[in-house]
Length: 211
Figure (cartoon, rainbow, N blue to C red):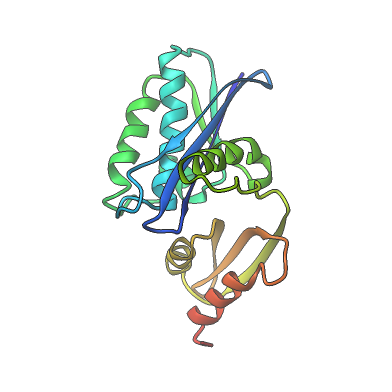
């Protein structure tokens, strides 16, 4: 079985340095890794989501070049990317639309391709490649992979589309599920540190009219 893991970051987001990383494994053994700039730095294209999409594309391009014919699982911790390529979310962003189409073109080359969301702690190797790419470009010290996380599960009294948009704007990754009464259940993995949950709590308060 072939597994490909992808990741991306943009710091600051948006308009900063956007990098991607990916790792390919066959039967659990790493056989290839890649990383680089997702787009020109400090431009309107530079966003977390563009970086994540680029990581997925680069992983599939590598596998296509290898003429992979067996089952492939593409895994990432971007809820947005995974749900869009599965057809669960619409692609409304002009920045993401061509990247989404490129995923579709590449997907058609594989007899069996599955897209799977995984929590951030299971994506540490791709995360490391992404951070290496960032460090190589900026000359900064490589950021530590985000593996020390806490899982947050809370209810927000706002529609799922509104909550998901607020999460994306804040650069947070999570799963948003609809609840009765135009409410949403939000599940996020956040850094296990003081005030780590503050961005999510601020979104909840803002959407519920408490700020």
